[in-house]
Length: 207
Image (cartoon, rainbow, N blue to C red; front, top):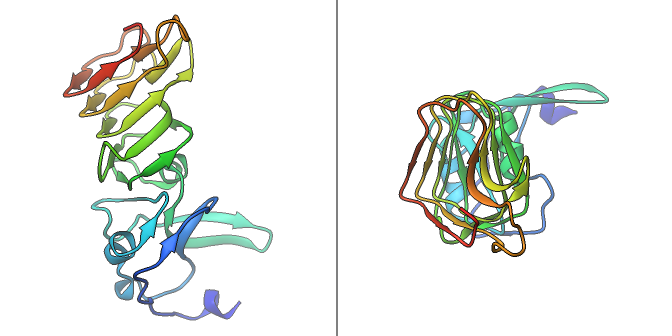
């Protein structure tokens, strides 16, 4: 297709409302002039029901990724997605994943070093939780509700042997001791090292 074969320039995208998307709201792919794409404006100057972007300094230039379709591999993909897990998957190690205000219903598995943070912890709601299996992960400024089922029910679960996880400035709200008798706001496996937990509000869990 021509837009995959020849360089194109970015567009002005502002004042729009995006809602009901299942994977991606704004995406560039193939060959294009990246310097003409204003990703900060795309992220800040439009309204989204959910929006997630990853990179070294988001919402600036997103990290490039690729995916495969029937015709072959599509490369140089940059995007604003609709799910936290989708951007965690395509982020590079040590990237920042920036999550815009909205309601996200998912259990996010983090298997690489990342900082995952939000634009507003009160209005960025994760109905589910985080399962962390990598060193050097930070979860910052979410409202995490209800948790997910792991060994027990948890809002954040750090797996065995992980080193250097930070859980900071979150609101973790459980379903209540009666509804989930084994529920924990933050739960770890054995031999977790250098775990930093600070500035969180943890309520309505067993512990």
